[in-house]
Image (cartoon, rainbow, N blue to C red; front, side, top):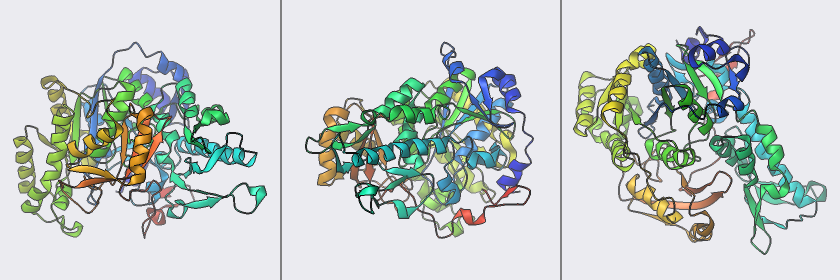
Length: 557
């Protein structure tokens, strides 16, 4: 059966009863969205503050490939396995964006027998969080142009308005646009553009806020542009936009509770991309999960060079989190692709290609253990084409690095197929205490922070920037040097070039643009040709999605 068919046959429990039974949450602290989704009360979350934290397990992966790795599937399978072993475990995931859902990637609710449900709802609209974020973002966009139209008392320089518009769809035609055409009634013409909602600073702010008060303050701190002549920064609070934006987001800030196919609780909340944003679910969901469960399993988007680094250097700094152990997801197929095999040949045994591609896993594993000081277990997500010889070789090479490689079959078997991984993690937590550390000092110059990421994690020899980007960094350094940096680059390589597989070294990371995120409190360094508005492929996944007369959705994966 397809993922969707498996999900549609799930025997879900009413979410209110499940929350009380498994997490002890009273029914009146939840607002149900139908029978199987609910939002948790912010007041209840605040009352959990004095409870001790559980253990935090971070799931990340090798560099993504067309062969697939299965990070979300592994996160869900591991959470189910821990519960099967009698542990009180909770899963924390990001919400899917409609852009990838209708584009190349498809949905993001797991796969096979390791899924969160209701799968169709989670992938399509869910509880409306993405919609609320998009509307709040675009409200500020509209208020900016309205202010300019009505005499521009703040003297905003039309050439230096940095706040774009957003929509939750891949649409390359909207990357660069001109607004205000049609004469004086329509405002002043200026260059503008669209990003995808997952790249919005409003998304980042929501995912880093713990209370409505903090959310509103961060929204007010959004830098929208600079005043003409004086080069004075202008913030959203000067337009009195932040109150209305927060009003639109008051429910979106509340974590969404759903369940796995095995009726285990899961928070699915927030959805910033990992290559063009910080790639983690909301801090409020993760920190709440740690108060409600003994083990929280969460993921960070794409490879460990992006998602895990940003989880640690951005999310952990802001939320005071400290992972206890890391799971690095890999597949034999993906490693052979990194070793030079074509996608069409990956079902064939090729020990030489596997050995050549292993350098990608090796660098990620070394970074996790030696740069961040975290114990790490490798989860080998099983495919039926994997041979005994390939699995044995992979296990030997991982063990030679001082870690362990656990074969996982959660896609086919659910939680039962990840029990060995769960047992290995529990043993690792007991035997190998975390020596957690950040990659760079909080007060280092922005240039040095970017260079630290490039040289320590990416294997780069140096970083470079054109004159404009270098000037931006110099101008921002006085005010923003205490902010972490968020690298926006391709997810497919340690370099700027997505065609460089494996573990390239000695390259130079090129910074094209720098974007201060004053409200989210980090600085984005855009590298290479990275786009913040993706495009659809030649044959988008949307072509296969349909709905039958009885309302049953088909083709979603």
